[in-house]
Image (cartoon, rainbow, N blue to C red):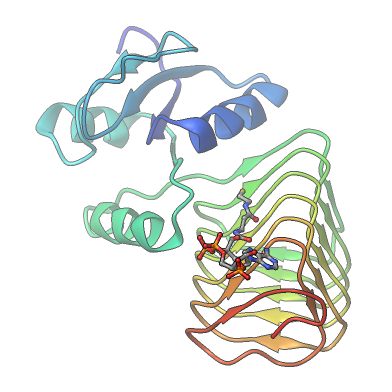
Length: 206
Ligand SMILES: CC(C)(COP(=O)(O)OP(=O)(O)OC[C@H]1O[C@@H](n2cnc3c(N)ncnc32)[C@H](O)[C@@H]1OP(=O)(O)O)[C@@H](O)C(=O)NCCC(=O)NCCS
């Protein structure tokens, strides 16, 4: 690349949000990796090939990058294959997010969108997505490669397991534990613990 800058891995809707997060703190985004060159290139980025191609790996060794893939399982898989080559994605944190000093934010691959609030002693795992305007209250824990959807609210002391998706606008009552690989529908109100590998919907969520 002619200029050092951030590289997006994945270049569709979710990556557009990540692009905007990086721009909010004046980062320069130069290129992307994907399965194929995209017909739609709204930010005029250079195509580097797949993230495993020789040309792309050379650039990923030299430039900061983010994994811009919303699907939790695929994001985790791509993270694993890159970290095996000692290539680790950076965090992307929007300028308008509010993160308490006592919150513990992992070092790699975390996305924190516009308007997110993270309150005291919350813990955010590697590769997690905190989407637009969600609220992570005091002492919550968000597992690795989990995704908290836009506008969702985790009340205090909620635990969200790894690779779990919490739908847009849902509310999780304080003290609740949600297992790994769970799907919580948009707008759900969760008032009971949720076991691993399940899907729950509605108010109260079942
Ligand atoms: C829960 C969800 C995954 C279900 O998707 P799906 O498996 O394709 O389900 P369908 O749309 O076929 O709906 C199946 C039934 O569940 C109901 N349903 C779907 N989503 C629901 C929700 N969020 N809350 C309550 N009921 C819901 C449907 O009305 C339908 O009911 P019916 O069988 O009585 O007609 C999806 O609707 C959803 O909420 N996804 C999260 C969206 C989101 O938060 N996106 C943010 C992206 S950043």
